[in-house]
Figure (tube, rainbow, N blue to C red):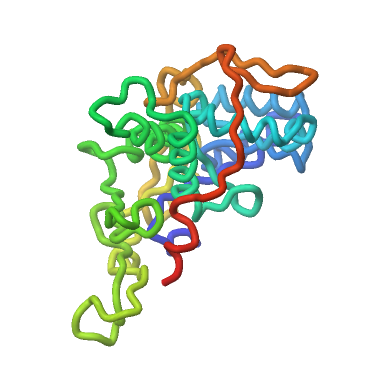
Length: 301
């Protein structure tokens, strides 16, 4: 059913199991990784079993840590999170389907965080000529190349390079991070800002994001891929798919140094009495933002 969309897909299997058989079965069926969710009991035994199977099959593990978070103080951890992003200690942004995250807000929230951190902490060390280039590159890497590296798909996506899929987004500078002008999928325009389809030119209002030819028909199968496990691809479980399947690899040998511009490893200390968070002795905190960029005014039309 997902082959009806101009997107690359990969599915995480359910990682909550105390025995390896069920986990291995999902991976051999093509799951590119496993997801541990606290709703199903993310116990130490379940975590250990999931990681053991992931090591065997070279797939990634995602973990939902609600239970751990509820044992702490939310205000202090949230206050530290933005600063850890700015330091490059947290390497990726993520979204969730129907929980804390919203996939449509990942990019604008990333740049809102960057703006807040620049106002609070000033320019990053190493930035020259009055530019924000280092911070910009650090935050872009959080939702492009670093997630691709972590999930073992950086050979295909995550950056602009010869041999990778031509999955590109073009922006008008005034709407960067909010409304893409053109979305190119596998070298084919799959979506774009377009005016009234009944007009003779492309600009009559309302100009809104609309699907283009790359989002229909056979283009769906030639411009997108499925990311799957090596075991699933080798075992023939995916032979009936219309679009190409690409195996993930290199997930279990990664270190923090492999993550682009986000490889900081400060010493984190949490005061057990005040719950203050420090990184290399620096208190990590920030006040809530009063004003955010890329907010309501960008969605008036």
